[in-house]
Amino acid sequence: QAERALADGVQKYQAESGSLIIMEPTTGRIVAWADVPSYNANQFASTDTALFRDPIVSDLYEPGSIMKVPTLSGAIDDHAITPDYRFNETGTAVVGGYAIHNWDGRAHGMVTMTQVLENSLNVGAIKAEQLEGSTNFYQYLQRFGIGTRTGIDVAGEASAPLAPLAQWKPSQLATAAFGQGVDATPIEMLAAVDAVATGGNLVWPHVVDAMVDANGVHHPVQPKVVRQVISAKTAQQMNQMMIAVVEHGSGFAAKIDGFKNQVAGKTGTASIPENGTYSKDQTIGSFVGFLPASHPQFIMLVITRKPKILFEGAYVAAPIWKSVATALISQWQIAP
Image (cartoon, rainbow, N blue to C red):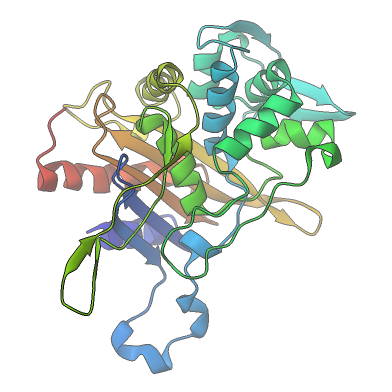
């Protein structure tokens, strides 16, 4: 069903490709994995070999505003901000001689950090990064696993190690706060956001349930906590902020009947690097979310690459997420 929903969404929005992955938050067990286009295993010999390379683990991309979850989480955990921290959002931040704008080109006036996440304001993410300071911001990126492999038990996992902090320009730190100029894989971003769903722990994602030895004995794969990334209190605050994204902000298309205040999510719309600059008409739209927010049963990331009809994650990825999540609720009999 996940493959069908993803394929329908890719076709509807005329995207070049799409990916979807679902994981149990606390165990890291991957329960669904889909890519479009894909291949028929029965036609292995005649398949384009490029399709054997799985983008979920092997493709690096600039994740866009999903990165605001680690950014704001780190700043809250570091006591640099609170969800209710207010400031005058002018729509533009000048950093290192570069003017950086919000996605909508607007100033939003007095806003809280919760509203920054709700409306996915780039300038607000930069504000959080600057209040936290470059060293601590960089260290929290590392703690969330940005720039390192997750260690998932699938071949071909890529990574783009973060450059040493001393090599970062202020403008690079600013854009990294909202997920541009830094590369990650989809599985890397899923694991990072999952730290909010687990109460602060980064867990090891895995696809193998058990191994069978030569004697036929099954050895279940044990879940692993890689490390605690943020405090349980910070995770709970971020959980509530991600609920606000769905209830009041850019994640509106992921609302599910009967699950009011129980869907936590974040949209992402990333510009694609092209010839030394960013494409003006090609994007990667994404949505990551988990439910029920009070006791998460799954976390899911949906990515659509280069959609031609609409281009924002809110409009192209969130509806696919909702479709699959609704089916999972029924199949798993999940109560809000």
